[in-house]
Length: 188
Image: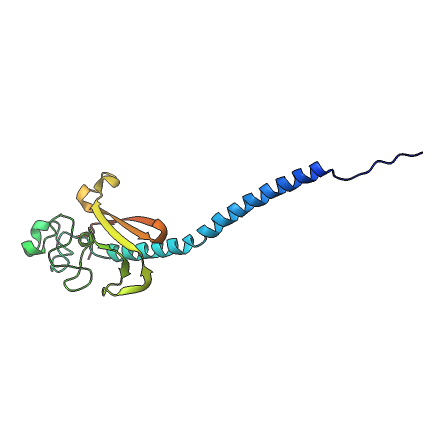
């Protein structure tokens, strides 16, 4: 008589297979949940980067000279002492001049005026109108002398470091740094 052996899985092998498969599927579910939760973040982060970039560009486009940009000697004077009047001198202090704002005349007219500037709760355009869809974002600006960040050929008072920090929903934070070098009297 010929004995035949049965082939197949025992009950223990089947249970172990189901447990291992269940653990693998549970791990994939946790990973999928984390990826799905984080997928909204790129939109918020991209918006924060766009706000920071826009504000940085606005600031860097302002002049950085010895005399106030309203002074007729703004492009030719080689020191603050030669400006038309004491009121027109950029004193070397960083911060806005009395009465100047970003939103109404007299407006910020040089880089250092933006030191300490902030928007909170929402982002406003240059006319102080809140931009639709940007509530929940805030922006802060810090400007400091940056002479030590460059080679010795650039004196300490000839460069400014601009730091723009934008905070968005879900504690998203973007920090941009840029520099502005004094260009007068080198400009025509």
